[in-house]
Image (cartoon, rainbow, N blue to C red; front, side):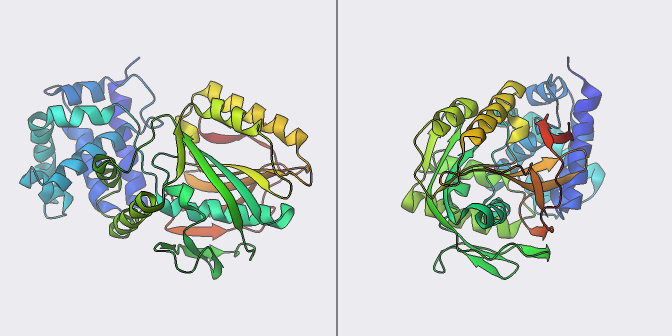
Length: 366
């Protein structure tokens, strides 16, 4: 059932996240939308009548992505003044957004159809941190399986160069170096070899189409100039070398991939970043059961791993967690991270030995 109050509140909640992540312009837009949304446009009506869980559905970011796309297309000078930071008066920002929702209703409405596909390349740093921890247990060769791959930018994890607190991983000549601000314990210093990387998405973006790149850029907040530049370079890498990405259901795909033969000496790893909350509860349970079953079959010669960078909404933070089989160690928290990979805080592993079950996008103790 729709809850207009909760749907408006989702924009204020998102504004808080944006403020915490040093994105004041995007925070200002979210705050103004909470006030400016009304029923004078189809976009406004659909947003206020949203029947899902607005925060988990990233309702605010869907609409902000559409508005950012309009700004990038340079079709509305008043809107662009807001996105460029020239217009900061709260009342005038609200007036501008009210007018934009009406004037550009037909262009904005489709942005509500699906969740944002930020596909942030910087999140690969958190995933690589997890792989380094697994490498200390099972060796440095990995077969990577990613769910929620979007356009496949994190499938370039073997082609990026990483500087993780001075631990260097990946080809030195890569056109993209990912260097988050490092805090805390440095990760293990291992030479990682990714023998293959493949992914699945329910609605993958084909970056050979210019419109797909335009869409991804719209989901990167206007405040994040460095992310925009990195996105452009990563898109060029995909277009130049391609990625192994298919369309499909995440649970179906994981079940099929884990049933395939696995070479000796290679750790098969399921990885994902900021996708778990978007999966249906039945899919999350199927994946968990499938991983447990495959883990029970894992051997020293054919290990299995799970690396994730996901939000803990209860604690309002993003976490890098790993688990590996064979072994009795439960899911472990090895790092905290900025949502887009701007910084990573390494933790002394094993930081936690308590088992966690993933439900509703959070990690809750049994």
